[in-house]
Length: 242
Image (tube, rainbow, N blue to C red; front, side, top):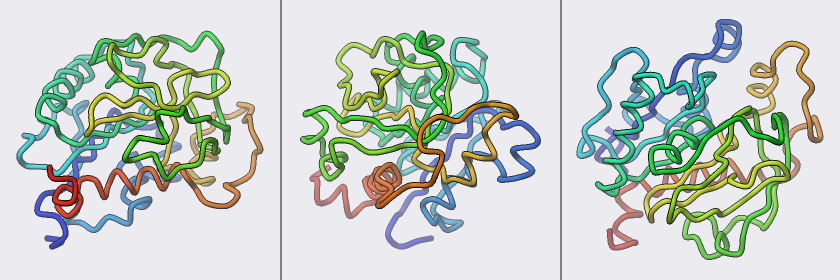
């Protein structure tokens, strides 16, 4: 096992992409594995939609909840089980990062409202703007006030959970980053995406917004993902006194 971490990071895969997407780029965990350059001992994959049991908190260093082609508002059994697990994980103070569907699922689990975005789809490389609170957030304070992110979603968190901090917004989505606890946050965008993944996930005939090109300069969303991964490491916890 990697000596930097005694426990693996849980990659919680929430449903499966369409077959043509899988053929091109694989399933969601692969995107995070590649983005973080994870080694086999660094992670484990859990698929609640296949009936797999969500992990015991003392057996993992943290968890990433993936995006999905499903909808939180469908209230599938596997999704509701995952939401209950999220609530317990928050109480346990487990490091959590929700991404797209995972973002919406965490917000729903903690009392927020998820629905079709009344402003419509966000799809492409689009700008978000961080709040002043984000500049004081331990995980986000090194990020610039504004940067571009990969987005592909129809539903949104339309009302944040009570006590959650809204740390970033886009033109059509007021909840791009939510902080729930010192250990848990979620993002509507895809920090694991690349241009290749975005192209593969774009439905046939769909119109992409934004610049239509790759990231210019540093990929700040990816930097956030890496920072979360570092947060799950024992060295980080020791420095923070956790």
